[in-house]
Image (cartoon, rainbow, N blue to C red; front, side):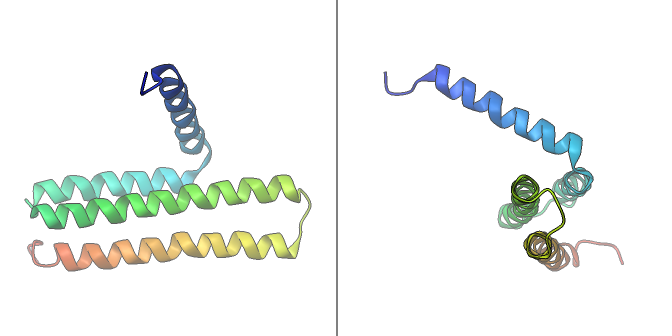
Length: 120
């Protein structure tokens, strides 16, 4: 058989378990997901063009991906060095900066797309 659906099903269960864990444990992910849902709803409410909707969804998922990567690195670093280590702190801070920059990028894209749509 070309596709092993049993393995695919198992992989999907692992992925959903990871999403459940991140949602349960990371407040930042919950906030970013909530904001993403609001912005996605606004994209449909304001009847954005297909290209604008694609841009909105790309930046929403980019922020969520950045947060997931940040969480993974933090967990790896906590296993690697349970006690405080200034080098680990720098790694975690840099990962947080990745999330911050992705949020800034998403906000800029959102401003460019929604500025003409808002009744200001």
